[in-house]
Amino acid sequence: MPAQLIGYADELRSRRRSVMAIAPASARRAIMGWPRVWRPEKTHRIEIDLRTGSRVITQEVPPPIPVVLIEKPPRRIWKAKRSVDGTVMPPDVVRLLDAVADAFGVSDGLIQGRGHNTLHTYPRFAWVALLKADGRSYASIGRAIRRDHTSIMHACNRAAELMATSTDWRHRYQAAHIALNGGVC
Image 1: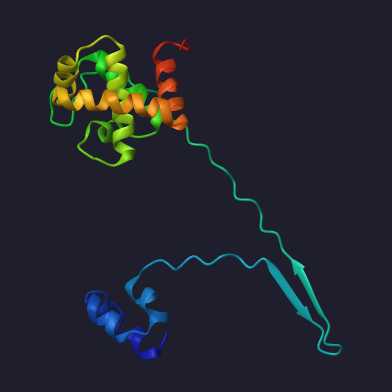
Image 2: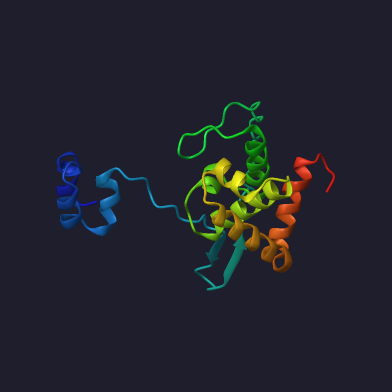
């Protein structure tokens, strides 16, 4: 880093734009106090014999990165779970929502939300299909999850399509179904 920039580092940290305009690219990170950019470790050593000009390349294998397993905290016993808009959902609806969230690997807030991405809608279709398989009517499902009954009908139709066409979706749906029924599909 140039010597003239070292003295001005504190002053320039407060004025980001002037730092970016004045400082060379190599000094910007240090002036702003940002962490260094990660660069991969060197994996090879090249030794050159100056008398003969021969080259020897040796590979240095870095030590393996230790894998730390993080355990999921145990699930709490059911407490009055609220939907996105703040209303309390019935316990059986929450139980199905938790099973689908675990099977699809998304949060229950994403499933309840208004997103139209397949990451949100596919688990939502499974949730609605499980509620329908539980013997509920379209209107009662709609009231429980705060949707119109025609949206529930569409979700059931899409679930039937996905059950026929997508093996990944079918396996996740069956995993949620098995988790609910204690290992029986």
